[in-house]
Length: 333
Image (tube, rainbow, N blue to C red; front, side):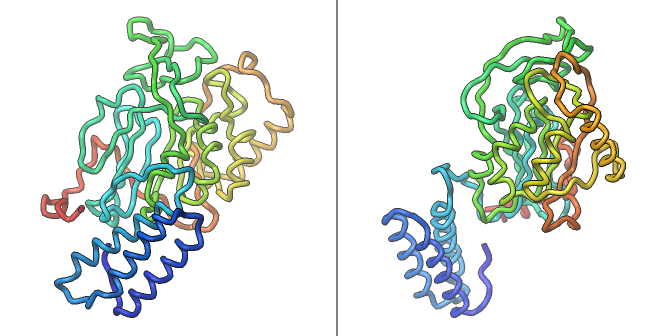
């Protein structure tokens, strides 16, 4: 963290952080730690030779405030202070996304959440892989493997037999046991000083469930989201709801997000008319048995307060070649 401004300004900033921390319901130990950090910082003379020590003191202060404001006692990820932005790809399969815009620099980080083929994801120093599934409750669940490289694997069963889930020689239908986390726990583990630049979900029917569980944390932390959605009440998997018109639009509107486009449709008026017709023709949701099939798309959501801000540029890890030198990566501490 770079410290700018004069000594008085720094003292005021730290004092304000201390006041914010004091107003929270923290333990005496954390409060004492904040006081010690504050006292150490105000005694600096702020000469260049002290910047390294000052940076360490501010880092300690930041960690105290992160811990103070943190909910549910979730442990924070030990990410370097140089990490300012992260992207999260839930259900990445073997090719997770990476923040590609040069403005993010060599210290940007990416998190892939992948329960089946995590060991096949190529290594990159800007990528962490979390081998887990995501649902509305943490624990351990059964997951069935489907399609090439398990790309259609799900915690739910397919709503109908189709080409992507019925090839025995490929191992379709094989049962595995996977750890399950919640999206909110992952978001809460990221220090609040770090910007979650992009969240992408592709979790085979569980997208809506995962986002709904994390809704309160989501609207605080994430501005740009891409989710896999279903159209026309068509079920890809049984026992889960993931319909764009019936599920997603009401929830995301409530949370303060705007649907700006889908992968296959950029005319939002046309899409709005499609939704109105669907809900008018079918006021009650049909069952998975009545309406099984395959009608999917990727929806792009932007929080209303930054709706004009474009989505960050991303590429797959296998195509990611930013050209950063080793000396540039050494600054990521």
